[in-house]
Amino acid sequence: MAQTHSTGSWPQWRGEGVVLVLSGPSGCGKSTLIQAFLARQSGFAASVSTTTRPPRTGEVEGRDYHFCDDETFQRRIDEGALLEHAVVFGRHRYGTLRAPVLERSAAGLGVIMDVDVQGAAQIRERLPAAVQVFILPPSAAELERRLRGRGTDEAEVVARRLAEATAEIGCWSAYDFVIINDDLDVAVARLEAIAEAASWRSSAFS
Image (tube, rainbow, N blue to C red; front, side, top):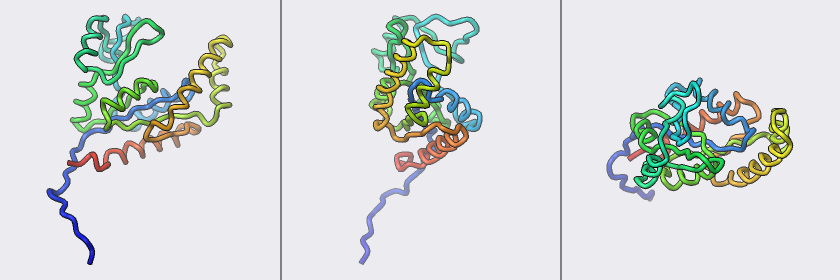
């Protein structure tokens, strides 16, 4: 006789928006992929980072960044208001505010974030429901070609970026999904498939 199990109340889909966290080495095409994804997915928006650096010419508060002073940034850390944060190049601080991400998701809208591997690790602890995707170039040789092909950086800078990229790539297994960004249209389609599948995970029900 087949066993039956009580399911309790019927599961209800909460309808929360998916939070996508993308990481990948410099030269993997992550920014281009995100822009192409957003052009096809009107229900998603890019997360706006907060920073202590001053606005550059043409930058708009709330569109490009949320600007604040160092004291405010530290207070947000102490209050747990940031999903992730880091000091970049030993100078200015950057981070992702928790409230806008959660509010948008609660409203059934998607959020996509571009963060480095350290930021993704922090988000993994603070927002386990976020779906983490690592973006890879087709090969190490192609990554080196892309970085050298820019033609604007000195050899030492390229070597440093290659070393950083190698270290970042070593973290790929900590992510939920991996996309090899060889063909942009294919990569976007794969990211769309991940977002669609993530919205129907069992954890999306209560």
